[in-house]
Length: 106
Image (cartoon, rainbow, N blue to C red; front, side, top):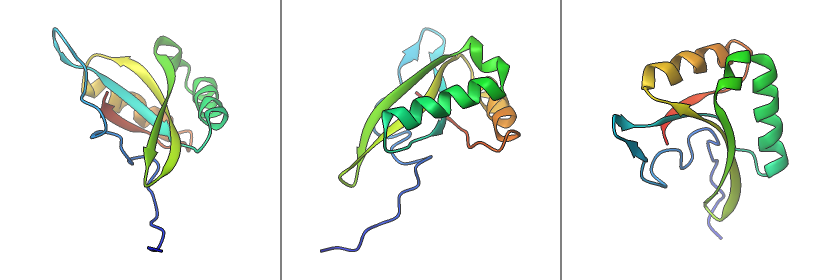
């Protein structure tokens, strides 16, 4: 059997798995705060981030299932960013609470 390969859960499949939806003004942006192996864990991350960063209440939390190297993960994301700079700025606030964050076209 081939050796198991470590998976970076923040970036695994974050951009290339699906085409980014576009609006009339261009691509939309989302922030991803993790990709744990269960829906429950992903929702817990979303709840924790919302408690820690009140500005997240203005954005739509969602969980997105994906597979990588035969394993299933659940992306914990917030949608609703019109421009990259807004997503990056909020990611910086999230990181200040010792959580991970990645802005991606979503």
